[in-house]
Image 1 (cartoon, rainbow, N blue to C red):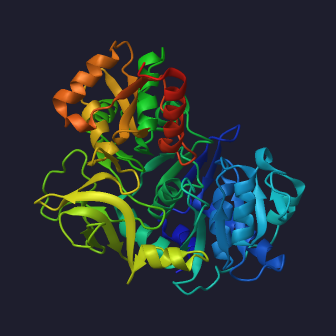
Image 2 (image 1 turned 45 degrees about the horizontal axis):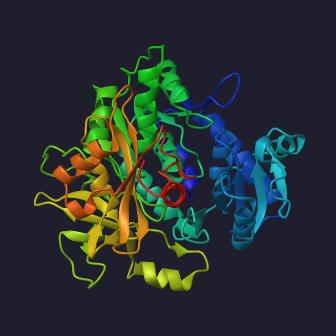
Amino acid sequence: MNIAELLDQNPDSEGIALVDRSKDPVERLTVTQIQNQVKAFAAALVNRGLAPGSRVGMLASNLSEYYVVMFGAPAAGMVFVPLNTRLPTTTLQYIVQDADLKLLITDPGHAGVLSDVPAITTGSEEWAHLMASAPVENFAEVDPSEVAIQIYTSGSTGRPKGVLLSHENVTFTVLEYGATLPGEIMVVSAPLYHKNASMGSKLAFASGGTVVLLPEFSARGYLEAIDEEQVTMCGGVPTMYALVTAELNESQRSYDLSSVQRVLIGSAPMTEALFDDVQALFPDAFVTNGYGTTEAVLEFGPHPDGLPRPKITLGYQHPKVELKLVDPENGAESNHGELWVRSKGVMTGYHDLPAVNADRLTDGWYHTGDLMSRDDDGWYFFVGRVDDMFVCAGENIYPDSVEQMLEQHPAVHQAVVVPVADDLKGQLPAAFVRIESGAQMGVQELKQFALENGPAYAHPRHIWFVEEIPLASTAKVDRVGLVERAQELLLTQGHTT
């Protein structure tokens, strides 16, 4: 099955499938209209002489044309390569060369950024000529194992790696998970180069839902979209909901959020404090903590015995997925360790990186790098990243655990814990903290709270209060940037402020 055929799964071809709020006036497209554009784009690629398997890139902010390229390249038997607009030009140039892009589509805001690949800008005369092609009658026949999408990881610890997702990887995930989302009106504000946003869109399109697309995330724009479009499902990362909560507290305008019935929080760890904040935002909604990686999706589902879902659990093992927890040190399986996953949704591998593939893939098992625990009922809980763990005086510290403890304080809205170097103990925990609007708190008060509610070795030795927690290009907390910021503060201040 070609991933473009996911559009055919929508039972209401004449219903509104996409509301593009990046356009003025707002553009509303049916499934049939999207399909026609996808088929025209696919025909244009073939007419340009691009061979099957050719890489076609997209460098743009969120807009309806993104979906045309996202589905149109695979519809022609080619491979879609989304490019992160927040990456520096040198990194984008590396991706262009690594992927061997044959064509790049950009929006006007990113036209001319890359000059070493043939490019067409949406809205231009060349784009109009391209889209005037007679639509293909049928999508390209593909083997399920053929690559459909080559999406690059953020590269925070090195050069970005091209994750190869086959048609089967994508269609398996959408069709197994999408059945739970019939008729949803889903707001999408995260960038479409990120897998969460693109996969969420595919889920909505395939299940008869509607995507309300925002050009980018802003707390006000997010709230306005929910209010004006009567959104029923929201997705986002924890920091986004923290910003939405702050906007509501500070705004003079009231928003009707009563339409929201489902809220999915993913891409970063969630605390019970944030869960409660989100539930208070959407009191009638079913709030869940989601999980997935660029390399795999659909690990978890509801409990087969109908047990009530703990607040911050990721869920129970999905029936069509294999999971195990493996000790990173000795390889033993237990109820605590690195999550390994094997399913039809796991990537085929990283592009041209055999050594990395050998390290991260074992007999079809993908090593996620995420440490988790599993309770006696089979619920899975996130513990931390294998790479994020650091050692303080011989004790392992998992930042997520310390963050959850700090956010139990009623004055703390959000906390991020990072390591800082120490001559005596190797590394010490430091915290960037955003306090609740109108609250007051001192460093020593929060330190004392940490000592009383967690192990002494894990309490933050340095605390900085900030107005906002910065996000990286993937809309997750920018931990790398905060580590650098902590080092700068220690150099300039020499002590906790």
